[in-house]
Image (cartoon, rainbow, N blue to C red):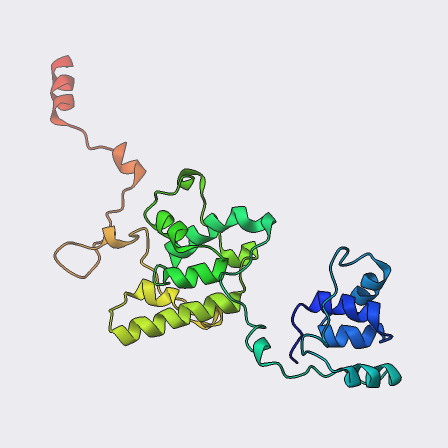
Amino acid sequence: MAKPLMAKATAVWLVDNTTLSFKQIADFCGFHELEVQGIADGDVAAGVKGFDPVANSQLTQDEIERAEKDPLHKLTLKYNPAAQGEEKRRGPRYTPLSKRQDRPNAILWLVKFHPELADSQIAKLVGTTKPTIQTIRERTHWNIGNMQPIDPVALGLCKQSELDMAVQKAAAKRAKDGDAMSDDERRKLLSTEQSLEAETEPRIPTAIEGLETFSLGGNEPEKETEYDAESFFNLPDSGEDDDESDDNR
C-alpha cells in the first residue's frame, strides 16, 4: 500500500485536526498504533509541524468525514502524480551514526573478497562514496593501517540477500563481457545457499606420508630391513682372540 508524503507530519496533522482513531491514522501513515498514540500524547514527533494532506492532494475532505463516521473505514490515499516514486530510496543508503565508523572495514572486506563488485554496487550496499572506495582499493586511505576486513552483513550495514543479489549481478555482467574467471573467483560469486549446498572439494595433503617407503625406480614399496637387538651383542669371535690364547699357552 502506498504511503503519504511526510508521513509523520501528516499523522501529526490528522491527530490535531480530525477525530480519526489511532488505528485509522496508523494504517494510513504506515505507523504502529502506539506510535500514533505517542504523537497524541506529545511523546513522539515533538516539534514536527503538521502537514495538511487535503491541501497537498493526499486526501479529500469527504474521505476524512466518511472515516470519522465509520471507525472501520480505512483511508484511501488520493492519487497524486507528484508522489510517484517517492517511496523508493534515492541516493546512497542511510547509515546510522553508530555504524558509520564500521563502513571502512566493510568496504575493505568487499574489496578483498568480492573484487568483481563495481564501486557503485559497494556504495549502494554500505552507503558510502566512490572516492572513499577508491582510496581503500589503492590503500591510500588515511586509516588503512588500522582497518580490518569485516563482513558488512555481520556489521548490520546490509542484508545477506542484498549482498548475494549484488554478487550475482556482478557474475552475470562478467559472464556477458566474456571475462574468464578462476575457480576461486567463481566460488566467491556463489550465494550463501549455493555455497552451503556445494560438495566439499578435495584438498592437497599437507604432509607426504608413506611416500618414503616407495623406491624411486618402481612402484613396489621397498621392504624395510628388520633388525634384532641381540644381533648387535652376539657378535662372532674374531681371530685375534684365538692368537692371544695360543701365546698364553
